[in-house]
Image (cartoon, rainbow over all chains, first blue to last red; front, side, top):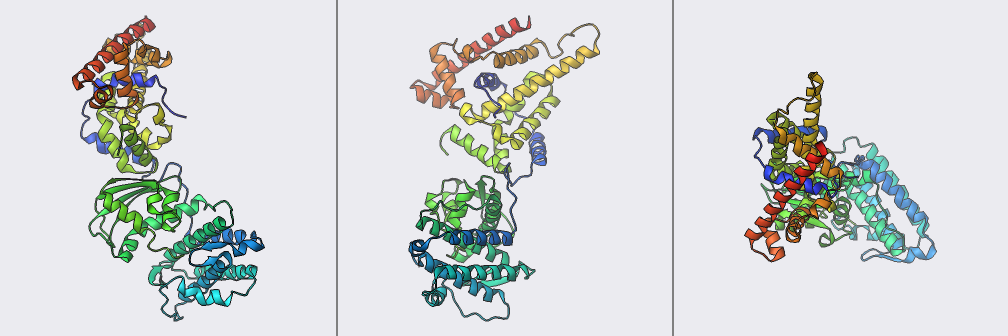
Length: 303
Length: 191
């Protein structure tokens, strides 16, 4: 439903000669009154972001359901450029869960394993002769153990290792949720299924966390831009409007670029299932800065 | 960012997403129109300020009510401001009538206020696109480009392959003619 009829355009004609500069104090009063009725930062039809652990839990359940639906030959379908077949991809995930459990244990000493793919090769080899449904069961048990371990952690701000990253437990959950979603996409593509969608609560959480992680992502890539900021506007119920510093600093400068993009597409770029140049985004202001942000948001992804 | 309608679409998208800096940008671009129109119809600065606040608050809270396929953001805001201003004038007149036993009083704001208000309402109600059809073709063409497609004088001139001064003249002439038609119709409606 809209407030306009084509005839209203003619009424608008009458307004043209009526332009008068309003009193200068009216601007602040008008903006304050508007934003007192609807809080800035969130879309009109905003989804409530879920807890990162709930997002991980739900994504584990989704992938478990998908794996249970696979038929015999589908396990051998090529699914990933580096991991290979669906069965090998799931074995890789089983290896990731084992590693994450160790990284979550402050008393465990995990060897230096910077490369995400190489780090799980031994597990993939170990499970090569195992029935793929059993591999899937092992992955699911491992993922549940990770969720249980995190539920007992308490301080989700605690920093933990994850390959060559040191991130908070919440950031780890975000990265893992993204990884499971990305691989569910791989498996669905490999087996001709419709691509999996995350619910809007998970998407909203991912948007919040991924935008908040932009300074870290830039720092990881060695491309921080101190003293500058971007306005990121993500559309759809999971989106919102955010001003992000482009370096690890507390002071936020006035944004020099505005990036407007679909929230779901933004998350797909962040989990490397959409290239930044495929994202339908509008960039106003410093275009190079906008491109830098969009090409950096996948820096913390591991798949 | 490309055409005026692209710019409108992007601003509305940003407002929908909760970007208050987009609301500020819309205010900076169109507050003069909204405030000026409200003041012209109500002849009251205080009311015009209130109406301006209400129009932008409404835009912020209900951005999904805009259909940019049916007109520009500027036209939408003008319509909102006009409707709200006419409502205020009517409310004021009704109050005055209730307070005065001896019939409708002289309009304090002068005859133009109620005429314009009534006429605009009348236009909306009687499908006044017919009125647009009463303009000479060259004026109608210029008006359609300027107000339906949101082009500036310069862009209208370029689009029609005519000098800028000619485009300006055609738009002014069209506006004057529309005003006359509007006022005639309003007088008929009121008498």
